[in-house]
Amino acid sequence: MKKILQRHEAYVFIIILVFSALITTINPNFFTLENLFDLLKSTAFSGILAIGVLLVLISGGIDMSFAAVATISEYTSITLCLKYGGSMLTAFAIAMVVALVLGSINGLLIHKFAIPPIITTIATMNLYYGLLIVITKGRWIYALPSCFNSFSQIRFLTLTTESGIPFGLSVVTVIWFVLMALTAWMLKFTRLGRSVYAVGGDATSAARVGINVMFTQVFVYGFMGLMASFAGIVQALLVQTVAPNSIVGKELNVIAAVVLGGASLSGGKGTVLGTFLGVMLLAIVQNGMTLMKVSAVWYDVMVGLVILISVGFSSFREKHNSNVRRIDVLEDVVLPEGARV
Image 1 (cartoon, rainbow, N blue to C red):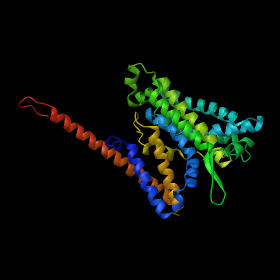
Image 2 (spheres, one colour):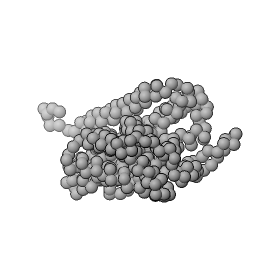
Image 3 (tube, rainbow, N blue to C red):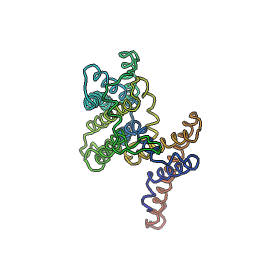
Image 4 (cartoon, rainbow, N blue to C red):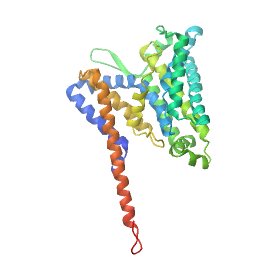
């Protein structure tokens, strides 16, 4: 039990329980299966993006262009499907190819020219998004292929409310969970996953032990692109429209959720479980404020407070533990007479 409580994820989970209990006392509708399934479904978009951001942060980088990549891949995929026809599989495949190319370009630029990732991805964010607006003239797509509507209605578990309204485990939630499971497996059990942690911890040392740093960095940003493509299609499934400006601007909230889950901006640290908890905590705060009829203008204030309290407490605990370990080491050292530490 003591070992579990030493993990950052445990404290995020405790905060989730506290918030959930508080919200439920004010509005019992929060703690219902219907609200839980709806919450998971509406959070799938940001949750999928957070998976990609997690790998980027673990590798020691940062990506500010993933919302633009998601928008371009979504817009391109649906436009081609409307023009030439295609199924959901076709839509996902087109989006994945487009996003993989755009994400990999980020990785290549960062590695080849040694430009700081934040500068590179801010530049590509403006480049990608600007080209999209120029080419499309900012037009919205209101009529999606018919397969989008039918696919979005799929449920892997269907229940009904007392009034007979169906609800359940949506296909978009399942997509999110499958992507999390695959990413967690890759990070824990594959050489590539260990390489991502190694590069984030110290790229120079990683190169010395034989890790291909260039391949790892390109993979990480390409993977971010893949997650952006899934998120873009999921966004279209949820809202049944495509707007060039609907996703761009959400980058900081996603990054904040991943950091809240325990990932480090300096690299080498982070878990899929922590990311899931961070995303859910921010989603619960927003959902709870809606159910408690708190004005939406307070949402950013609450998010800031939650992040500061959670991350600040975790950092204080780690600093305290490192001081304790240092004292223990010094107590075990036998110094020659007259020597000083």
